Amino acid sequence: MALGPKSDEVVRTFCEAVGETPPKNLEPAQDDEVLLWQRNEKDRIRMISPIRPRQVHKRHTRKYAEGDLGEERSFYFRGPDAALNLRAQNLMIFVQLAEGIDDATWEHHLRAGDFSNWFRSCVKDEALADDAARAEADNDLTPQQSRKLIADAIQRRYTAPASSG
Image (cartoon, rainbow, N blue to C red; front, side):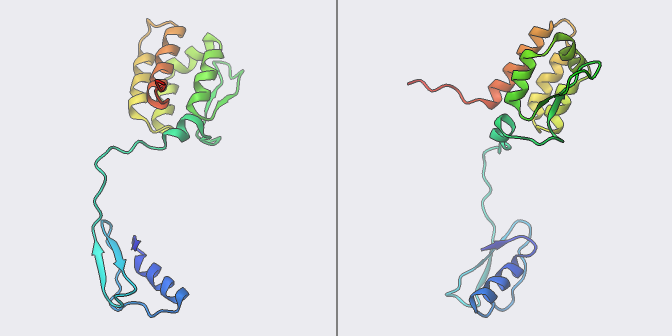
C-alpha cells in the first residue's frame, strides 16, 4: 500500500529494493485514494478509497497538556514592565505558573488578550480560546476569579477524569 502524490515512486523503490519488476501502468494515487498492489498479483493495481473516521480528531491533547511546545510556541509570563520571563511550555505548566504569579502580571496578559491568542494560535484550541476571551472581556472578574475560570477550562479539556475504583 502506498499513498500520496509519490505513491507510484514508493512502489517502484520497493520493487527495486527487493529485486522485483514494478507493475505495469503504475500511476500515483489521488488525494483521496490509496494505491494497493499485491505482489502475488503481479500487474494488478487497485486504487481504493479509505473510509474516513467519523469521530472528531482531538489534536495532540497530551502534547499540549504535558509536552514541550518549544520555545517559539510557549507562553511567556513577562508582566507590564517585562520584569519576568517565565516560560510555560505546555498547559499544565501554564496553570502552575498562573497560580503563582502576581496579580499585575496576570492582569497585564489578561487585558491584552494574550491568553486567548496563545490558546488559539499555538495550542490550536478554539473552544479554550473562546473561554479565555470571555474571561478577558469581563472587567468585573478579580484576578483570582479569572485565573480560576481559565484553569478550570484547561482542566476540563486536558485532564482525564479520575477513575472511580
